[in-house]
Amino acid sequence: MAKLTVEEAYELKVGPNFQLADVDPSSTPGLSGKSSVDEAFNDLDDALDEEQEKLYANGRAGNENAGSVLLVLQGMDTAGKGGIIRHVIGKTMDLQGVHVKAFGRPTEEEAAHDFLWRFGPHLPEPGQISVFDRSHYEDVLVQRVKQLAPPEEIERRYGAIVEFENELAARGTRIIKVMPHISREYQAENLKERIENPEKHWKYNPGDIDDRKLWSQYMAAYQIAMTRTSTDVAPWYCVPSDNKKYCRTVVKTLMLEALQSLQLEWPKADFDPEMELARLAQS
Ligand code: AMP
Ligand code: MG
Image 1 (cartoon, rainbow, N blue to C red):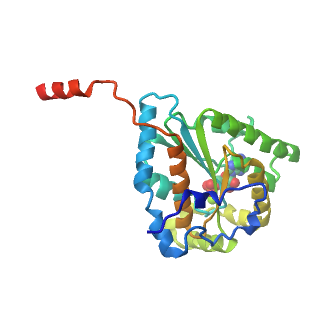
Image 2: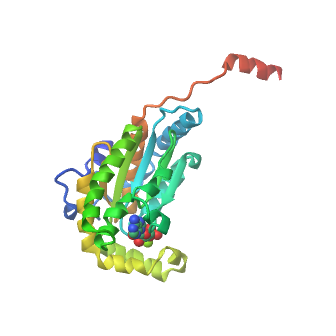
Image 3: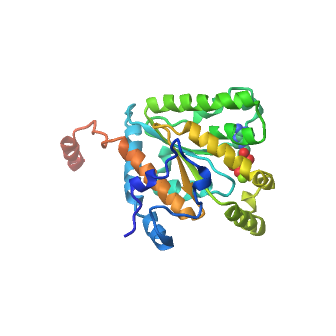
């Protein structure tokens, strides 16, 4: 049975010498070939389901120290962010304990505040998992590439993000940041499919082609953003994603590790089971 180990997933962590250009989006590190990806994909589902239920149960029981998880998904159009939400989060977790939020262009009200303001209300409470489909990183990616903010403001944001994530981690949130990394060629295939298939039109936006034209500028912005903000408490993982199932398998592996690291027990009963059984028998 093919498996992806945590150590293999950690190999995808962005360190100081990381070079995005060296990552082959069509590779599947730790798993050789399509059949082993397919096998490894379902391997962790039961464990994920159980660990997330335990987290949710602790939150419901009022355990303020339950901890929480924030999963940041940040990649180019068609990289597979939505698929991770649907096939990893949606299929393995109790959605009562999950908050999914997609971030588009800031509204006028949001833009009038500091760039981090709009994320606060979507951070996970103890016992919860939040998933960001795009994130505060747009403020140093699209905003850098399209010069939507002055260079000195963009420059300030890297440090502000690290500080923001440090504080979040100090409050007990495990942070996982994933860049599903696809090739430009694979994106063309995906966009073509979205344009040709009426069932996929809803996923297509003509602006996607404008962003695609700026591919190398985006890659440069990702390189800078990931190397400057990958920290011990909030590491980036650059995950080859031309094989979407491979990326989803990595995300499952990282999520399970994050949940297990919370070392949670099932909440203790606030009643006496013996007495309740006796009451049940008499009822
Ligand atoms: P999508 O996720 O494909 O539905 O598109 C959302 C769009 O919103 C993308 O084009 C993002 O680049 C854009 N977006 C998200 N956050 C920001 C931001 N802070 N500033 C400008 N554009 C943003
Ligand atoms: Mg889009």
